[in-house]
Picture 1: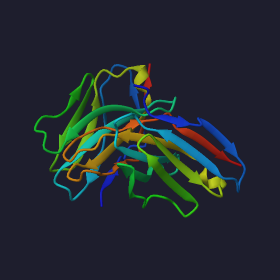
Picture 2: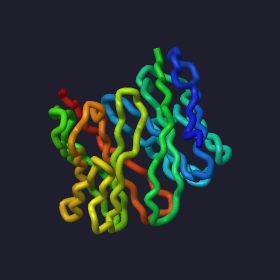
Picture 3: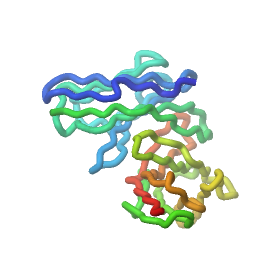
Picture 4: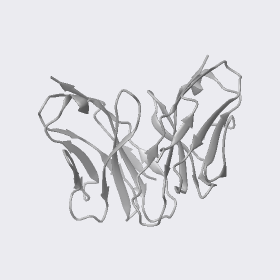
Length: 116
Length: 116
């Protein structure tokens, strides 16, 4: 089991550039979550998918952020245009989902994003 | 709406002592799950322990136990015989178990530092 795989591990970009973060969930998991972690705001849930369908994107900060899950094995989080305040660690996590189940989240290693 | 509160931003504990990390939650759901995660300085998120709202016994996993008081809506993590390697951020999290696809929200975390 390779775990949740995120890329890149580190991204440094200039303000105004487009940034794309990638995530491969654990095979067989049907839910995927994107979190953002900062010192000021802690771990914020941005969006989550179930069976490739976005369920709740109320945490997405603004229209500059978008996320897709074209298939069960891949998701992207895109920021366009990026701003310095987007600098954070972005985590992807996956789990299996069944009603009444207590499946825990498996996290990727995160992407450290720095927008200059 | 669901909410998780961790009121201890930081704690210092002497090695080999027991430590309790506080977590209170707010939810209108009848069926929910509570999780604790550890985040060492390396950044990865490590699952520690889970408690279901209908579980009659408090959860235990090795040196970790969860002091679950449903009426008070608290789910404190107890670490017995603390070790230097326990120094890390600790996050309490919650999810609704009624839905087949539910989000997991996190508290703001507690930074635990173990003194030798």
